Image 1 (cartoon, rainbow, N blue to C red):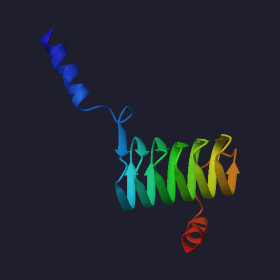
Image 2 (image 1 turned 90 degrees about the vertical axis):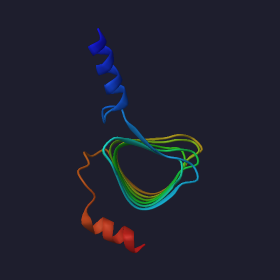
Image 3 (image 1 turned 90 degrees about the horizontal axis):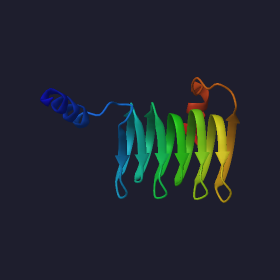
Image 4 (image 1 turned 45 degrees about the vertical axis):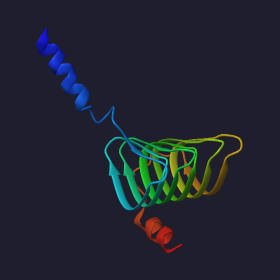
Amino acid sequence: MFGNKKQNSSSMANPSPSSAINMLVSGTHIEGTIVAKSDIRIDGTVDGTLQCSGKLIIGAEGKVEGQSTCQNAVIEGTFKGTLLVHDSLDVRESANVIGDIQTGKLNVQAGAIFNGNCDMGQKIKSIPSNDVKEASAS
């Protein structure tokens, strides 16, 4: 009886990576590389490289500029750069997306700004190294 309670409280203190979400709050600015093994929500600003094994969520106040890779993405804020989404990209009505996009599935809501190149529908493995160099030179 008591052993079960202790085990449950222990699992609450250390959530599994699949249930964890990283958050970058509004007013926070990061330059460099972020690697997240679980979902991540950006409400602040990121300039650089973002690699996410789960879902990338860019909130309405969020801004990401650079190269990002993730399994799924929901964009409500601003993205500028190269975006590789292995499965599904959802661009919400408040979003402003500019750049080179590769995704398995794409949903763009009315009112969203979506400018750039988009390759869609193929099983995505990785961004070719030539595309990364060209995107960095821009």
